[in-house]
Length: 254
Image 1 (cartoon, rainbow, N blue to C red):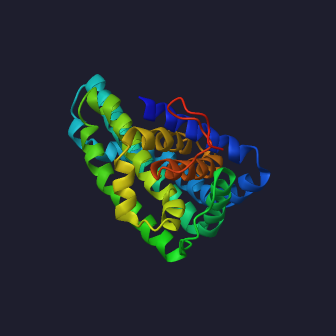
Image 2: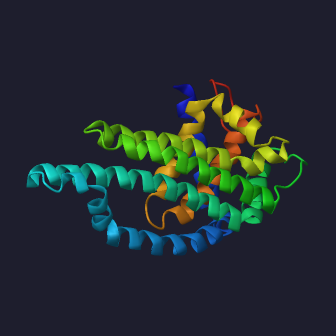
Image 3: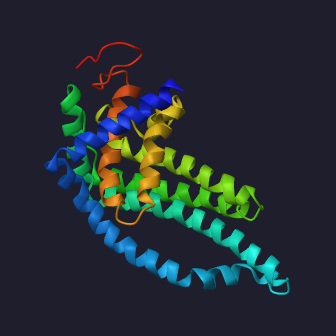
């Protein structure tokens, strides 16, 4: 549990770093605001047509009693929302990072510089941002399909599926949000994935709050830069570099 608490502290420090700095907040919020406007239209359209979509997915319940049919529609509706939310949040972050790649690269460098030296590695290219974003979207769709199917299972679908979606979504977000900091340190996608997997609780403590906040309309505009700042600190922790936090009872190294 120490990694879970440490991850939450890293997230809190990342949030404080961004929210106390108008420059960092503007830097990270601008690309997210552009993406949010696009997604807001899509989410309104989805909400408007949700009943019709649920009806199309539940023809098997047409001859059931009203109570049983309504229960089936609720189950399918929750499963659909959980699957769409997972894809929507991950694509939102992927598109935001693709649009604002240089912005988040700079944000990560500034956060790095607040707690230690900034590695002199290569900057992340726009092509790499788009490539990893496409990969992230592909993975989210692959995960969303079995989650949607599992959502048809009574009780489990309404309790376990949203939790699993948040855990999977948080992990995938961390892979993308740590990219600028870890690529400066010479780590590609495969190396990032192995590094994040080595301390799952630590990664979830940063990724899951970001995922959950991005589910709230317009809050993602702030949640993405906060997550990016926290992910930079997470990258430093995973690499054994100072983060500005005292750990394991030791005083802070900065």
